Image (tube, rainbow, N blue to C red):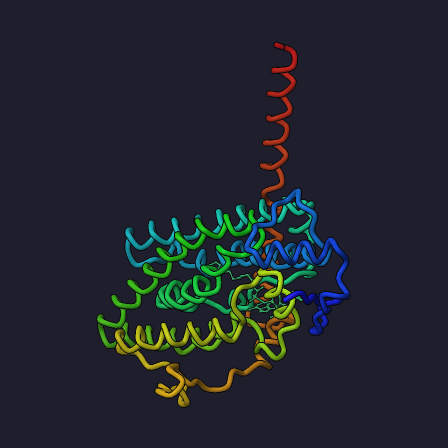
Length: 330
Ligand code: BYC
């Protein structure tokens, strides 16, 4: 149990004997499921791991608003438009809870956002794919939010208190998002032949990128061993991916849609679906900035930040004036 990695980026865990007394006590608290709180002592690598993961997660929520925002003005009805706007607003809120959780670790939101805009840190690969038709909005809710929930429900039990608590509300909202996506897919799959074809096309394009959301295979995951030791991650990338496939294939069958994988097959012995090989070269290309929409997503985020500068400055000036007025009155 008492083993830690020498450095994040290496896969070798240290033996208990190699840990300092503080590190041993820290790991013992984690093993006993005691939450770590901001003012508690923590190994510097634990803090860095959390800042990395939480900020990647926060950036994903904010960038994740963009592919959906593309469809607000083209939603097929007022009801669908209102629902989509509420969902996108929820994603913005998730980003804010997560930036706040990261700030408890001694970093500033402005610095995290500057790193995103400079391309120094990642956000989820999935948001570098385009939304080409309305069925894509259904597929995002069904598959992308479905994958997100699969990954994030266990994070409600992760070792860092502020992150775990933020995840509780996020997961509740994500589960509505998943249902609204499935509702769109039902409407389209049961609609005209043309609508059903759009739903199938969306599933064909979003299936494999959704499986990539869970990250590289366990054997290639540089951070998993240490993150699981620290309960920053509760389940491995491959375990979560398998759970997602097992949960989603029957849903596709219910919709009457075909999962685009010739090797997909129920394995009674394992009690799981076997599925085909993932094209990891595509995943790595997207991570390197060469996905279909990487440049566009960052350009849009930077522009939104710059366009909003006067609002942030006005809010600070207003707060300063109020504080000065209150000080004069006191
Ligand atoms: N995309 O050692 P590994 C959402 C990176 S939000 C991009 O396995 P780890 C949603 C990884 O960061 C979705 N990068 O890493 C929002 C690492 O690079 P760095 C986001 C990826 O951290 C709005 C390297 O590959 N969810 O769902 O142990 C609307 C090696 O990987 C990806 C979260 O952030 C990827 N897919 O595991 C709807 C949840 N996968 O950092 C939905 C919290 C891996 O060394 N995060 N990388 O430069 C996690 O659970 C984990 O961080 C991951 C990766 C499973 C994502």
